[in-house]
Every structure is written in structure tokens, then in C-alpha cells.
Image (cartoon, rainbow over the protein chains, first blue to last red):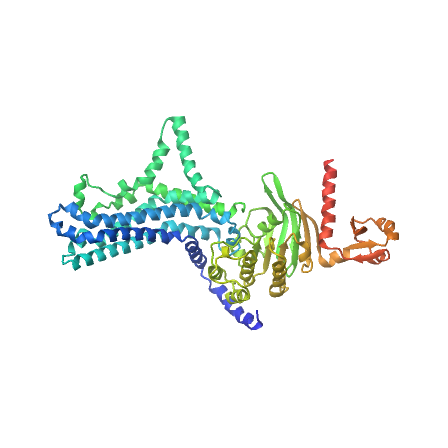
Length: 310
Length: 291
């Protein structure tokens, strides 16, 4: 290091000390999570690629199907494109949730296992900041990634499908009328918000396990609740805890949506009429779950701060 | 103001006492060597100082309670432990970006200049680097931080001789400016003896010996007596005696050097030899208690 650059560095440094925004450690902690866990965006992209690949194989058949579309019943008409679009979004969402689960299980145990915790802790980032950055991944980053990837995938499908249909001399508008794109996008945002909030205690629990167990986090995360359910079943001959967990896994569907009695009615409905945010957001179970998530995450912060290192 | 001040510092893990009522005071501008056998409590002491673990008793580091304010403390303190702690998935440029992002006192240009003098490529991942290169990278990052206290916990573990030498040369020449304070623990005592200003022996969670290097040189002397003076030398009650190439070497504490010089060759002992003498003593006394 030369003397000249030393002196040049000094004023710049003192300036940056003064100007350092309190959000910067948080921002860089989040960047670090995205660097470390590339599955956050790779996994949804790979699934989107598979969806598009399947669509590509199907694509030559579309003109033929559209020729017959007027003779089909309405719900069958929607299936022409609707299944591809909906199934694609569903597959990308499922991939995102799986990534979220494994991310939560690893995000606090990996850094202890490889001892890099000593490096992270040697920098001026509080444990609260570091853990909150990790919390952002399943709660904010992944839903956004899922949404963006799924919407772009749908646009590619609709665009390519329309192009093929037009080239074969047919009217492409049925594709867009049977898949009200904007309404479906709003519907999708609602699904993601509902699901993420409903799963909050699950994500929180996984992160708590990750901050506590060094190895076999998946085993601990699953066996602990299973053990409680089994003890309850044997001791009291009841299955309350087990059904509580089951309800947490799929209960949001009945709460957040008003589903028609008859499946054939779907075809005539505005998708937004299916949403029931008032019921969902006034449900006590949702808020109890979120309270549990906060407690679990607070526990994870506490454990990261005070646990004996490696 | 002392950089580190502790009184009655105590840490237990279950029934094991890792730190047993430690009192210490480290002034600014010193280089302290913390020396002790495995499990003596060195790393525990450093972890307390760095705010990594809770403790009992009083502890102040740069005027802060490290447990309460680890994140603020780390703006002023740098820390390298055993080399293998940089995250293996990280790329070199990511490490630079991250530290520059979170650390207000990080001089990126300085870190890049240090890296330019090595073989390390910015696009490499840490896992692709050799152990020596990882240390160079960590050192480049830490040396570019304008900190008041640098803590080195076994920094050269597992490094080959060249890198160990280079490591301490860098710390001493590029970093230490007599304003900063360095605390280092190592097993390779002989490598740091020349750079220390103070040393502290720690064993079983207690400070066994603590003195400056000036005191050390004044207080301890090693004598290789001439054959005819051996009995006379032994009468002066050496701390310890060992054999080297068939000749006895006696270690004295607080005996006038001129008096020893009359009996043979006098030298300043190595810290390692004093360490063995002092630790042998405590081990013996513990055994005596047990018997």
C-alpha cells in the first residue's frame, strides 16, 4: 500500500462512516442470501423451462383444436389453454414452496456447520438484521420470483400460441377471452399472499429448527410434530394435534376462496368472484399462525445470537 | 482508555468452568499474545471479547459491552479465527462487495490492491482457493478495515511455513501502527515471540502469568552453566531444568543476570520454554493436590 493511496482513502472512509444508511447491512445481508442460495431463482426457472418444453411439443396441435373449439362445451374450451397456463403456474408455485422449505431448513444451520458464522459475526451486522434478511426470502423474495416467472411463462405460452394460431389463419382471440390474463394475474397474487401468510408458522418453525439443530434439520422439523401427534394419539386416543397440522397445510383453500358447489359452474365465473379476502383475513387461525411465526423467528434470532459456536 | 478491560469474567459450560474469574486490562497500542494449552479457555475468552457468547462479570471492549452491542463493536474490531471460516460458496468479488456494503470502515481500494499482489482471481469461489490463498483473502479483507482492535485466534493453523511468515509480516508491517491493538492466540509461540509487546499464559480458565515483553526479558533468564558450576547454579533454585545435547539448561526467575553470567552462558528464554516450565509447574501442583 502506498502512502498516497492511504491518505486518499482516509477522507473517503470517514465520509462513508457518516453516510452509512442503517438499511445497508440489511440490503447486503439479503444480497448475500441470494448469492448463496441460487436455487431461489434457478428452481422456478427450471420448472418454467419444463412447462414451456411440454407446451412446445403440444403447440402444433393447437390450430386443429381451435377449429373445433366452437363445437365444444364452454368448460372444455377453457381447457384448451387454461390447463397449460394454470398447471404451469401451479408447478412453478410448488417448486417455489419446496425451495422455501429447504431454504428455511438450511439458512441458519449451514453457516454454523461450515463455521462461516464466525465470518458473518465478525462484521457489524446484528443477528436481528441477518435473520430478518433470511426471513425475507420465503416471505417476500420467493413469492415475487414465483409470480414473475409464472407470469412471464404464461405470456410466452399465450404469445406463442396466438402466433401459431394466427399463422394457420385462425382467430386467436378465444385464447385470450378464455384466459382473462389480468384477472388471473390478480388471482395469482392473491393465492401467493394467502399461501405465504398461511404457511408463515411453518416457515418460522423450519427456521427455528435450523437455528437449533446443526444436522438432520429436516428430520427434526418433521419428527418433532409427528412425535407430539403420536404421543397424543396413544395417551389420549385423539388426533387433535395431527389434524391441526393437516389443517395448516391445506386449510387456507376453504378459507380464502368461495368455491362453487358444482364444478361445471367454474366456467361461467369471473375468477375474482372466487376470492374471499374478508373471510380469510378475519380468520383467527391465520393470526394465531402469524403470532406463532413471530415467536419462532424471535427464537431463531435468540439462538443465533447466543448459541455456542460450532 | 484501555481497549479491553475485564474483571471477574466468568464463563461456564454446564459444569465445566471455561473462564474462572479473569481480570485483565489491555491498553491501546499493544500486541498481546494469549498462550495456553488446548482447552485452556483462550478461544472462550476471545469469544466473550467479541460478543459471540454471553458471560458473567464485567467486560468492556472499546467502551462497549460486547454481548449487548456486538454489531456496533464490530465496526471497530476485526477478527480472524482459524482460517477456514470464509464461506466456501462465496466468490471473491462477492466477499469484497459484501464487506464494503456492511462495513463503514472498509477501504475497498486497499483490499483490491492487496489482492492484486496475490494469485487470487476475483471470479474464484473460496472453495477453489488453497488454504493459504483463503488466508490471504481474509487478511486482505481485514487489513483494509480501519479498526482499533484486531483479534487473531489461531490465524495460521494448518498453513505452511511460508504463509505463516508472510501472515505475521503483513500484520506487523502493513497494519500495526502503534495506535491499534492486536490480540493473538497461537500454538506456534516461537513465531510470534518477536512481534509481541505483552504476553499472557492462560490455563484452566485462569491467567497464570501476565507480563510485558520488557518485564519478561528482565525477569527470566536461561542459563547453560559450565560443568563445574552446575551445582552452584542449581542452588539458586531454578524454575525448571531441562537437558539439551547432554547439557543442563536452567530457567531462572528474578535472579540477577550478572550473577548468572558468572556461571555460564545466559540468554533470554523463549516463551515456549517458559510456557513449558510454568505449565509443568501448575500441572505438578494440581497433581500434588490430587494426591
